[in-house]
Image (cartoon, rainbow, N blue to C red; front, side, top):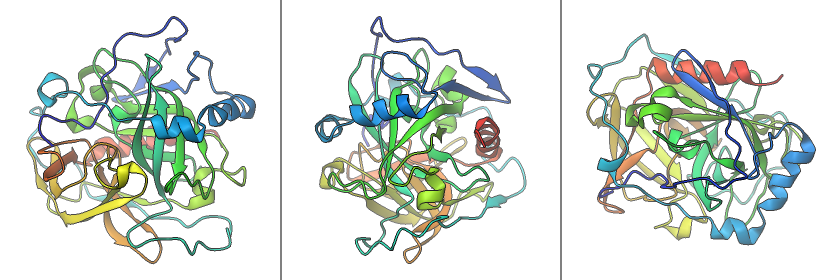
Length: 326
């Protein structure tokens, strides 16, 4: 996607924007999720203010801004392009509740994939794609690093909300508001494309007041599985359906230089953060997350890249799980 990094350009911050105080651990960084006016989202009352903010009209107005690939993100040249440990996996999990079935599911549409909405430091509204992932505490949503933080010299986003299986304004499982945001430090400090990974820890919410993975289930996760794997990429591209429903691409990945993988796909803006799934199963709506949409070339008629999932994603996953409330 020519000169495109499927990310957001924002500069400056309003006076009300409170700076978070992120802390770091083993190459990971986190911050408490906040409202647009800088308040920490620490209870259900404040979380409801976020969902109330995201009216249908505001969600419809959210856009995906971009920056030139050469101007921001950096290619990974620090390591030889290879796995940095043994292959590992977390298995997918089904919901903990019976929602009565969902006859509205489409082919290659997952209830564990959804649309993300957030506000930038200047107060503008934006969106990305994301997906739930299985974990013991059932609170994690995986996306791109640039969907939670601006990258080098930037800030964390606010009013962060996840809508699983959003379609044309419909929220079949309700909405979930972030409790905390995490990303790889190399993305936060240096906009490294090889580290363009983010995980949001979610408050209880949705239509049933439960945890997000309890409500919609969660994809599995794989790391160190090599560079050439078959995947299904899911997301909400603005060039296909106006970002109002899920679309997919399928193909085999290859090394894109450094610790990145690439695949052919015609999805553009809005698909940022969407999962690349190994062994995606249409009948269950689950697979194994093997990367996320980061950036690409030749918009809508080419290919895009994602970070290669090695030990770094497992480190971020463990870090986010450790920060999650019970």
